[in-house]
Length: 120
Image (cartoon, rainbow, N blue to C red; front, side):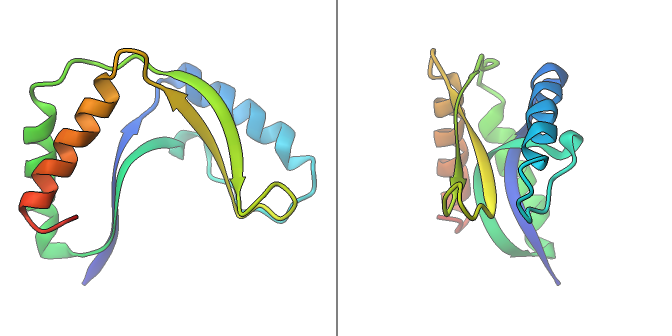
């Protein structure tokens, strides 16, 4: 059995609330977008795709190992966009800025650990 898998960070309630407000405003534009509940909004660090269920435990272990030595990241919400574009959006995204690089270092550590077990 395969499970659609990604590594993500839960955002603080204050950011999720603000993004939920923006989402509510965007819904009035009338686009046929399937919206994520605001409590499901997250920051994706690595998308793994469809993964065999028996590999999940090893992925979790490697992700925890990569995360142990990292300090908390302070992020700033910066930009937004849509795929493929704003005229016919399928995905809306919000970009973040990582001023001290902590988030980027965490992402690189996770990439390295997961690459060791076969996830490029």
